[in-house]
Amino acid sequence: MENEGIVYFSLRGDFSPPEVTAQIGIEPTESWSAHERDPARKIPSCSGWTYSTERIIADVVDVYEMSNRLIRALKPYQGKIKSSVTEFDLQATLQVVLHISTDESMSTPAIGFDIEVIDFLSKVGATIDIDTYKNSDPDATGQRR
Image (cartoon, rainbow, N blue to C red; front, top):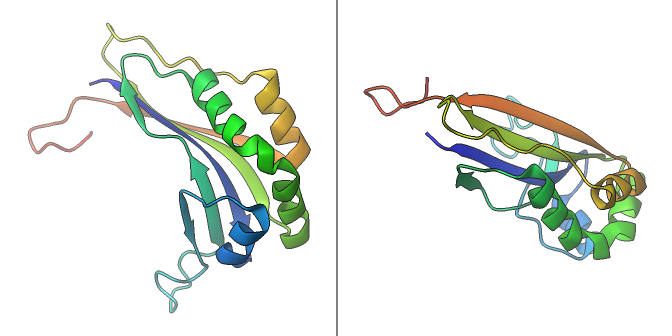
């Protein structure tokens, strides 16, 4: 089993995703409105707007490079992202999701952030969240354990 990773920038809160998209000026990779999946149970609990890298499945997953590429794409919109965060009281997060191979012969992902990424996140008021999972071999049913 190889390593797998994705990096994305997300905005969450009580807002209209089309309105935020129009204000920022870049189409998100994904967006949703609060309660749109199940209004009776109020799922999801908030609206979301995400812009992401592609999912990487490889021996080597380099979070430095993935996050830098993502932020370079968003940097021209930095002021508008910051305005949206302030105006709509949004939570901004750089999210890293890694499935790390349990195969001892595989390299572990390179996890870190360069100064350009940290500067951007600071200027827009964003946090960093890193989720890691063991990427073990599928069992006989093809499911991850």
